[in-house]
Length: 239
Ligand SMILES: *Cc1c(COP(=O)(O)O)cnc(C)c1O
Image (cartoon, rainbow, N blue to C red; front, top):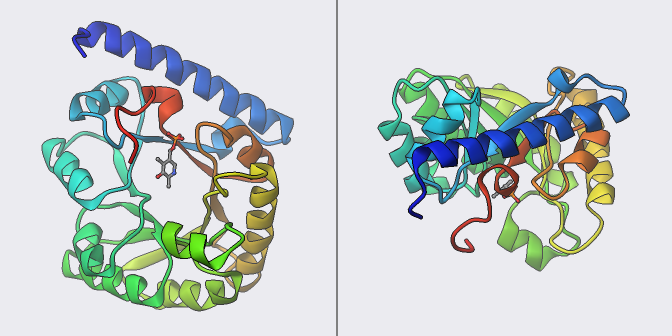
């Protein structure tokens, strides 16, 4: 990686332009405006310099999936006008610490995590917006490994978030199965979103869609897409 920052900036600018165009096109196809979809750029594994470059290119929403890495970046980039989205599995013993810096947590998948996020948020006099993560994986074993709750538990966890003074319920989040039909999974997520809105009408956000499938997710109603490699390039190592 001996690239000069100038060429890295050009590279990010060009990929970002393409992704924004694709977001707008998918939104238009779905009869929605591109401004109804928020682009979160996922910077996991990439250096803070890339986050600075992205910010200079107008990116305001940044996603990370690991507590240590995210906290380090938040501290190194204090004052940069970006909002931090925590999108990885939340270990409940890290939840309070995550609530100290994250603006948004997309991966709330238990009452216990909700309560601990709330404790951390209140301790730091913050409000953290939350998405309840539902599993779109077909079987129990995969679900346990990749996180997310079953549709049976959705309303109970949403209720715990809704009741928490330090948290604000925004909607649902889902990750499609590794192999399989992403669009079908996103259709299922939309049904779960409708179920949630039936009870909490303000919780209408849908966090769905990654580099390979964000257009499908937008067609199925995604309001927040989480895009990493399509903007930053292939990650250095699989994680
Ligand atoms: C890494 C990650 C993404 C982004 O994945 P890309 O394929 O690089 O766009 C989105 N959501 C979650 C939960 C992730 O961990």
